Length: 386
Image 1 (cartoon, helix red, strand yellow):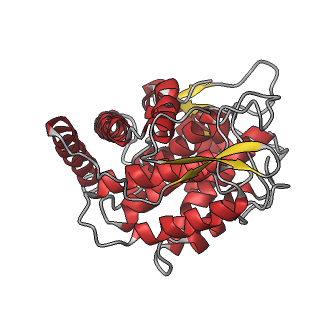
Image 2: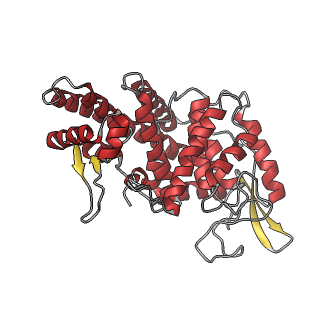
């Protein structure tokens, strides 16, 4: 590790014979320079994020859409860490006989979804804090890869970042040792609530980068750091629902993302990182807003088509709405969702196939047929493919 600036921290030699990076407390010194470019990016990100949040007011049954957006963020964030599971995998994990087809990679995404909802629920009674971060981390890693690495507890040993097989001496980055890590996390918690009049999006950009630099857990730091963004925006009431999947941007620009974080550490390039982050907020907000509009248009189109074939049967419109939360279904599941007989469900299912809403995705020789809400998934799964 070669340090070109001490603005973000210092490299310290450890008694056991390796160098570690110990970050300075936030805010940066000298302060962040908000030049014209950053101000324009901040205004753009604020405006586009506000437009995204506003769309929740016109979404029918917003909780159905939010559930799918949460799953998408979970898939994207987990994929950055190497998890091999797509959005369709997450939605199609059990067969009709009740046999569990889940893989470790799918369970990691499932845990991420649970961690999001757990954290959002806890924010109602506990502010974002080290205590809450630990609780969420425990939810994130329970019963999945990393479960043996003290979920919910800050590390007591040194960790490092680098290619598989690297050592402390060959790692591309070595976070602070445990004693310094604890101090840095306490200082970060203090920064959460400092009355500094700093724009919220710039502040969370600093918090995310600092958390990733401190790397306080033995595993799950990347996912936890991205969760912090969602929780911060919701706690600050910048978002009323967790509709932003910023991991999509980080996945698309993975190399630039890691390079920008390293430039903060070794060159003190906070401004470059913040600009990268704000561009991500704007781009992802636009993408999510466009997706929401496309979903609204799709619902309107299919609702009108169904009126031509449903003969006044309200179950058709009910199923259409329910498919936005359950886009992969079987006839048996349709019967359960609508509380109707299986022959009735089968007839409705066939009409949905004729209209083009549902598409048979059953492999040959598989006993139980499954159907997917094809056009809806094509909108939502963008970027989540393996």
